[in-house]
Length: 417
Image (cartoon, rainbow, N blue to C red; front, side):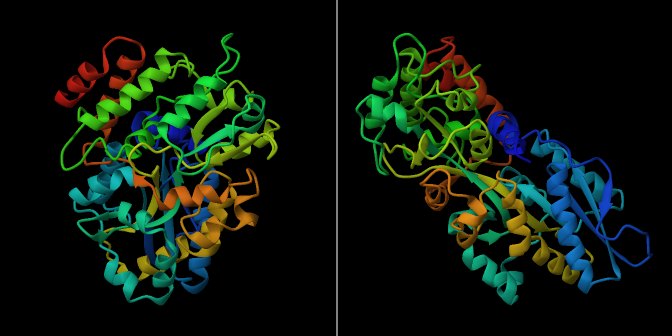
């Protein structure tokens, strides 16, 4: 599980929303393995084998109170969310429609536009257990899984972005550690001072992945999509020009080809943006609290970051609504959320778990800043045409960073596309 989000982040993040994950397995598994001829609930999931196992454990707990229900889990890889939605539709038309579904934030609009999801507001308000869980979620997470003020999913994990920095490099350069509320200009000046002329250390490692770029738009109080695509808005142009300046002045290595997370762990970068998913790998590489810490994203016009994640939903056409609700409760129970978070990739979606050091660990010192970032974050832009938006944006960024087009021309062309 340790590398799962990195793949997600590099493709959602850099190629199709969250992903190209290791498949959970192509077939069906079940909390109750034998065919009993009893009622059947179908679960459509995605992720890796460990995440599939966690879901099966939740299914087994559901079966303790519902022994006459056979739950069949289908776990599929995600190469694009439009493909995932098509798989869902195909299952539905072939008589194997899923009752409970795990979807990424990037798929919510598509699923709702295809009339596949049941609104959960009334279900949650009438259920004491679900109401209690909902109260613990960061409001922005619920907003991310809502369409037209209707809630369609209960999150099981999230990701966000903070800025990590190498404390030793700041000390050696005689610079104060950054503090929440620092500005783009302060970030830029620090990055320049931390960059070594011989190329052995860069002040910052810029990733060209979709998700990792998003905090720069967010903290400039803009987005790729408002009511319509807005790739060439004035604030987007400002944001990309700022990033292009980092590339041209060699404050960052090549964003297209560099593995910035490995470079940070090998102390070739003074700063890099990431979420929780890097921490296990960095600690395995020998980084400790003495080496690095994190701070909120630098601000230009507003404080903020970005979040993505996944949520459990109920099919609008389920024939087993009450049982689906009971299974949903097991899949978002504290026990299940703890198990998901234990892999070290996901940030738990509730405050009590995300600020529990037994779950989140104690590295870096400011690890609770990750939860703070979630609470002030904006959802990654994910309209119904997400796949096209992501690919167009990434192609535009590559044209800019490679010097193929100037910023305004690249964004104008992306907007037209």
